[in-house]
Amino acid sequence: MALIVVITIADIVAPADIVFGPLLVIAPGITAWFAGPRTTSAIGALAIAAQVFMGWYSGLLSSRGVIAQIIALAALTSLIVLLCEVRERHRRQLTQVRTVSEAAQHVLLWPLPVRLGPLHLACLYLAAEEEAEIGGDLYAAARTDSAARVMIGDVRGKGVPALGEAALLLGAFREAAHQHASLPELAAALERSVVRYLADFEPEQDMGERFVTALLLEVPDNEPVARITSCGHVPPVHLGPDNTVTVPSLNPTPPLGVGLTDPDRHHLDVLPFKPGDTLLLYTDGVTEARDHKGAFYPLAARVAQWADQAPEALLRHIERDLLAHTGGHLGDDAAVIAIRRTLVTHPGRRAGHAIQSGAFRHGSEAL
Image (cartoon, rainbow, N blue to C red; front, side, top):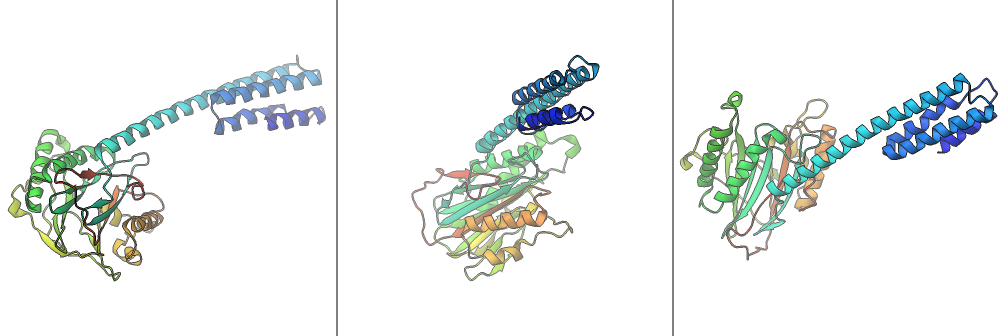
């Protein structure tokens, strides 16, 4: 409106051979940048009225030049309003898609609990696709009678297309977490579920190419150890209370989906895990994230400076540092879980009572 007033006054006081009227189209054009079609239409109507007033004031309202300017301004304003309406419709569609994505996220991927027995947990999920909240990385946790179990996995592929396998594995874990005494037995049960799913739903063009890497962790309440079965997944990072950082050597088996349904084929690794220690479970979307020079993100080296931080603070540092390393864009979904063993055991959760899973883009504060 200020532009319309300024342009009108400038046209009135300017010499007769200088015409400012055509500049009125700037007003609806700028309005469309930050307002909707109704406001843009109102500003366009005011601009047309100002053009008519300038023609009347100069006594040239009936001239061909002024009439042409009014018609051109009305046509351009109509085009701007039309484009503004198309933009608003796309914005509404995007909002609806985001709403559906968030609903699917809450239904399919539940947030991890902050406390699980003697463990203090925090998690972080960063989806590779711009508008996606969830993708092919997944994690879940379960409380048994005398231990806490955590799973982190990575479906081949990324983003929404990998959701089918992610949903299958989460459902299988929720069902099998309390039914098998050892992690190798649990891994074999998950393998059978994935194989059945792939046999029914794997596309022919992807035959034999779809699989899921997974790491199963079990922390008993009364033993200072962590038991791990790795199905082709990257090893965790161990942070000691004295700021030491180590990456343990595991004996991984092939990923889920290749047919290893015999529990004896899955290895069990046992690591020291004392009160005050922290384990970082993550997917390869973290360590394979590249900077502008193509260098991978050095997770173990970077977390050494934050080894004494609480899980939530540790993940906030990792998130900021990872996004700074990649320039704000990841090439693959990335998930991280920070698990610290505390001195206090939290009894009262019955077996089968608390099974939690989740994947949230900014989940480290929302748990």
